[in-house]
Length: 85
Image (cartoon, rainbow, N blue to C red; front, side):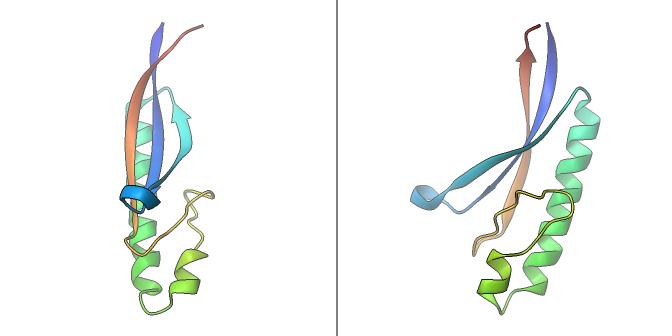
C-alpha cells in the first residue's frame, strides 16, 4: 500500500459549491506543483475576465481542462489518499 496525491479544484460556496478532480500523482511535489500552476493560471484568467462574467464562466485553464470558474475564482488543493493494489 502506498499514498497517491490527488489535485482537486473547487469554486462557489455553500449550496453552489462545485468540486472536481484534476489529476493524481505518485509524487506529492508534482501534485503541489500542478495545483500551484493551475491556481496561478486561474488567478490570471480571473483578473483578465473581471468585467465579463460570461467570458469568465467559459475560461479555459491550460493546467486544468475541467476548470469551472465562478464569480469567486477557483481554489486548488492536494488530497493524500491510500492506493490499494
